[in-house]
Image (cartoon, rainbow, N blue to C red):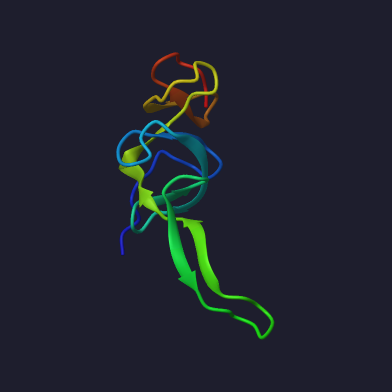
Length: 106
């Protein structure tokens, strides 16, 4: 299976740009490079029926974050506070990400 290129990283703040949670922001908890999906904190909440795993544990319906496609989220710049595209440049032989709107290093 092929790993998809992604300009997002864990703990980045992102904004949803399409779907039922459009406009909401959250932090990336997990990234799956094979499927190209991300799990964002408090975004795309779904209800799931869970079985008890241990003897004294209760089962029931729990709300969890479901993965959503990485193309539906956009990185939020720390300086300008707006969703932005990500660019790359080299600073002292080091590849860094930068905001396409204000030029700030991410």
